[in-house]
Length: 318
Ligand code: XMP
Image (tube, rainbow, N blue to C red):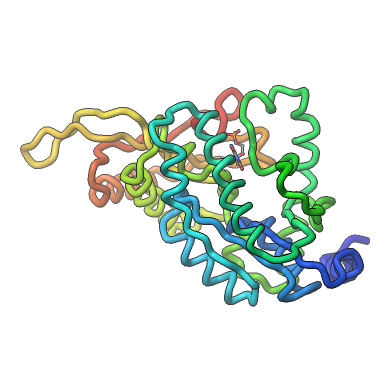
């Protein structure tokens, strides 16, 4: 019978056996999977686990410093790397969704490789791959999802990273990963966190990405997410976020005519992200959130709510 406790015991033992005195590198994303994988390895090999947490400048508002603090609080040997400028440079003037993904994926590998090479004598690369990732990347090789979107966080290693791969969560489903994390007393806000795409806010800013647009969207997103938490709706939603549209529309403020940005809010329920439906959020919630966004975020004068299901729409807009 599968229990978190027996899984942890067996996995820690197997990791110790496999790794011995070797050094392991792991990229933390702030998400559930990489965080739980890190904690398992931490239990198994302690300081021989070298975690790298890259800020691509496309995370949620304040997420980088806050999550980095949490990781340190969990005792992890973690290095935070702020590569915002490098990612922004790679994204400069790029408006095509797939090219944006590729630029981010490429830059991530470059930054990560610089950091990994700095760890002397590393032998292993750990990843938070879970069972559905394995299935999806296998079925995607010939299937439509491979061509629709290139999910850059699954797949082969670049040639220059000749490390042996360790994937302690490869046989688990998401809910099992959460149970393992709970059993290791990890912070509930890491375990309960909504999924967040690797390319981050870049694929929620339609068109080209600038630091100014990222800042604007971070403010909008923070209001939306904080309100979901305040109204106790966060845990009833599978994933939520805001999209910054490449559209200006006319508004009025006092006796001034405005011509400013429009944002779309999206909240979906789903079990695996493959299909999804929009969440019937209370009108009062939408009203309060829309007012707060328009009042507080300079440059936004219109808010809409996305009522499309997947398929045919996708969860992200790019
Ligand atoms: P879509 O938009 O395809 O999203 O319905 C399904 C789930 O996948 C996430 N997503 C990504 N995750 N890299 C990622 O790591 C990506 O390029 C990417 N694109 C979409 C999305 O947030 C949702 O959870």
